[in-house]
Length: 136
Image (cartoon, rainbow, N blue to C red):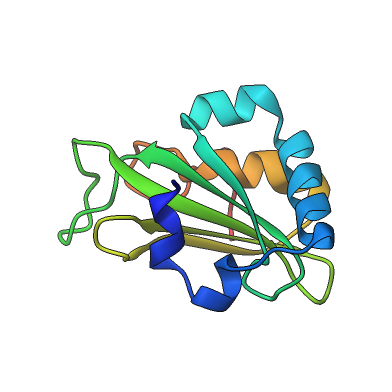
């Protein structure tokens, strides 16, 4: 069972339709095996998404930011929700599973940028997102 479903709004994770499954499959195909393996992704789940237009929820292990603004030393399990918006853009949100705190949120992503934006979350530098892959 994907524990990440408990850190997101109930409407975003419960009761995916066939259309939501199709969107999740497309996101999974675009991400590809290499990106998912790089993130250590597991528990891939089709969900309605933040805007109920379809999405993919997965669990990854990422080094979190500390309260001091530095990078933590131990990876934490995070839930990543990849959602389709009404404007047909993609929104990516990463939350720490144990605390439910937001780690990163990327909006306005095109399908051709999905791999780079998702990889930007897995970073061990001083910023939340890897600037080689994504800048706001």
